[in-house]
Length: 89
Image (cartoon, rainbow, N blue to C red):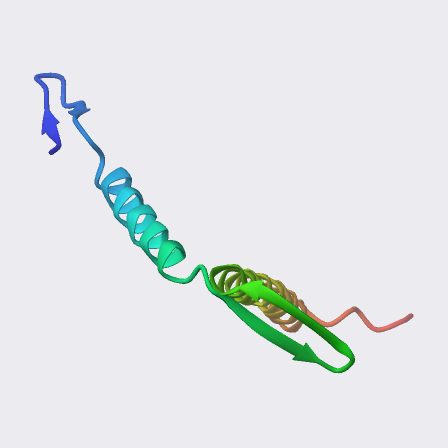
């Protein structure tokens, strides 16, 4: 896979690329296995989507929630670590 030349540079396919290709192949197999539709009933909205699209939407919502919670947690932690303001004179 990776080899080092005489100057120490790496040559060959990166492990990250190999992992990305494997994940892409697994995702393609997943999509092709779930082409059938699923019915969604939420409040007064009723529609039918392919199962893979529903899974992709749920993963996207999960990633978005993760980023929002991380941002909120970092702001909360930063606000707690600030020193108190000086007393008024």
